[in-house]
Amino acid sequence: MLEKQEETVFYGSRRIRKRSFIRYFPILSLCWFLFLGYSPLTQAEQPSEYRLKVAFLYNFSAYTEWPSLPDQVLNFCIYGEDPFGENLQHLQHKKAHEHEIVVRHTRNSEDLPSCQIVFITRSSIDNLSDVIKQLDGMPILTIADTPGASQQGVILNMTMKEGKVTFEANVTIAKKKPLKTQLSTTPFRH
Image (cartoon, rainbow, N blue to C red; front, side):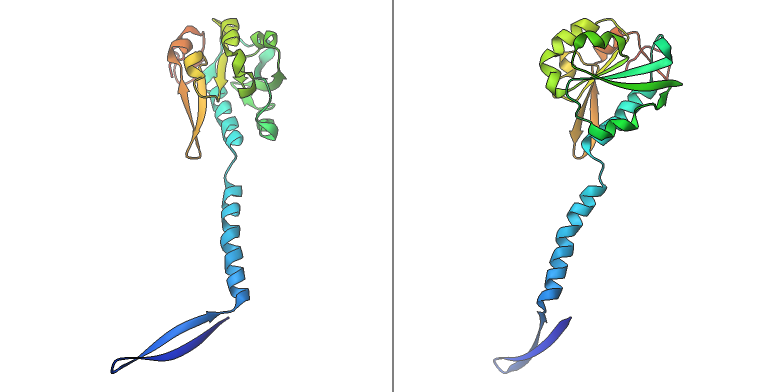
């Protein structure tokens, strides 16, 4: 509720009516609450960083072809502490190229050769050079989300910029892998 007040002010010989509004405290409080409440509601509608990254991981698996897949499954391995949380459930048992995606977690680098996709988490990035050497020449797509990981030998490195997921590709390493994109029959070059 707004109450209107009118005041007459004299400036020299001129008479000017000045109008002002008095706001009741409850109205002001409600407006302030709505203003403050709007921002978190808007942010809640935005997908989280790792939910967006899971969508990219699925697309990476859908557009990559492996020479052969044992047991007709696509082993997606998280190496290190899992940053995805419940968001990774969206990948479990989805299909890519008619192959069921099986999500596995490991902290042992010796498990990685049985994977087709390896996501190297930030918690395991200190062991990156050993992992890259171990997987050299194998048809395994390596992915990370740590600054500088692609320069160290990871094929795809995801980053967040202005709320969007971007990625960089290490084309030199990708060409050495026997992987192909679904978009063409040429070796992985993107």
